[in-house]
Image 1 (cartoon, rainbow, N blue to C red):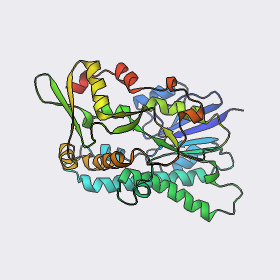
Image 2 (image 1 turned 90 degrees about the horizontal axis):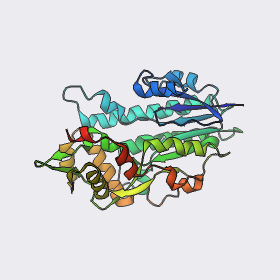
Image 3 (image 1 turned 45 degrees about the vertical axis):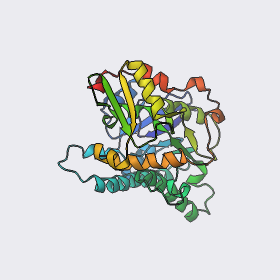
Image 4 (image 1 turned 60 degrees about the vertical axis):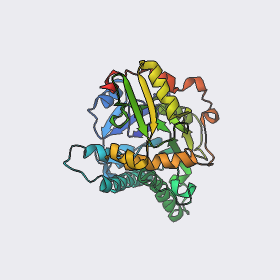
Amino acid sequence: MTKLFVVLGATSSEKHHPDYNIRGIDRDIWSPAAEDLVARGIEMVPAASYSLIALGSAFKGATSIFVFTDFWQTFIDTSAAPSPDYCALEYIAKDVEISQGRNAVDAAMGCLDTLEHFILTSLPDEQTISDGKHVIPQYAAKTATIKYLRQILHADSHQEKTLWDVTSIVWLGYYMENWLSPHSKPKKTGDQTYTISTPMPPDSPLAITSTDDIGRYIARFLSTSSPSPAPILVVTQHQSMAQMVATIAAKTGKDIVYEQVTPAQYRRDIPEIGRVLARSYAFMEEFGFCGDVTTVGPEDLGIEKGELTTFEDFVKVTNWDSWFL
């Protein structure tokens, strides 16, 4: 019998699985990405505000649920507002994402009778790993969902089956596609020279992945019979900023230099999200992606390295012309 896989925050990277029908949930089911999914035979349903009622209906009958909550959409939604308060937006975005996560958990509780996998995308608990030194709003928003789920576990510990019993945590690395975001565009510093600047030291490795590979991980994971005992780490490579900039320069034939700047300068350069990103870079510089936390990697899921997208692959298939405009 065909099972139902429900994806909250569906994107064009979702992969078909032979044993599942896929139902995608998105804010805008008429977007090009959503229409692409429909063309590939995926059912799409709207949930503009991730409300409990909308998610409860969309999750009905699900065998597996994949939840992606969105910290950054709040910044996108207010990008056209005059003189937005970016400091306040950090906390608004955090509260919005926490609400999304709680609603997803509460809605999933309503389909426990059919549910085999509840897959939550998250990030490492930066405050625990750093002993309180690093506090990052988008990390805290995602870990708040895990903490909420554990609170429910304690409250329902007498139940024969709990949501925690079928829960797996997925940690997504730094997206290669982030390079195509406006804040990653290079500055022209001469007739034919460009500069990329972040607070990250040039040789410090970043754990990176392509959004195209998320579906590969999840499809392979769904072939297993039980939830993962440790976070699934969706990471293809570890590359430094200097390495990635050099790869882009080689592909485009442009003279691009990487420059490390102070967090204060970075916040001035990117006032919208520079504060948040600078904190992330500071944490990753000191602790890597997740400190010494044990994770499940591609080899544990039987994924060969040749199946995943390398940064070189990503750069090769990307059109970089508009990046320099």
